[in-house]
Structures are given as C-alpha cells and as structure tokens.
Length: 77
Image (cartoon, rainbow, N blue to C red; front, side, top):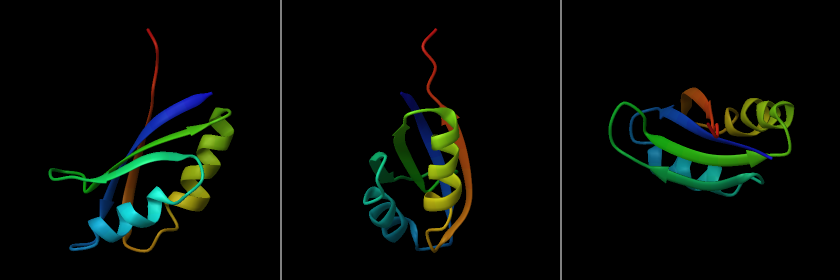
C-alpha cells in the first residue's frame, strides 16, 4: 500500500468545490480546503506507485478548477 499527500492549487474561489469533488474519488481518504500556498490538501492511497500515479493523473488532475498538483508520497524511515 502506498500513501501520499497531494498538494493542490486551484483557481481563485474554487478550493471548496475542488475539495468536495476530490473527496468522492475512490482512493482518496481525505480532502480538505486550506489556506496558504496550496488550496487543497488530499490524502490518498493506492496498491502501488503506478496506481497512485494513475489516480493523480487521470482522476484528481481532471477535476475542474485545479491548476497544479504536487504529490508527496509517505515514507516510513
């Protein structure tokens, strides 16, 4: 199991709508609109890195209102 935080930048005024839409995507465990340099922070999980990449590239990045994402995989050191 691979887990990651996905930091999302949105168009102005779209953070709440984007977070709501993303929270319904399979594999997303949490999506919150926040303040700061990113507008939404998402926690997601997938069976492997390839599936995580597909989740981000095909499902999350296609949500209307998103301008940029940064995926940060969780590591256990």
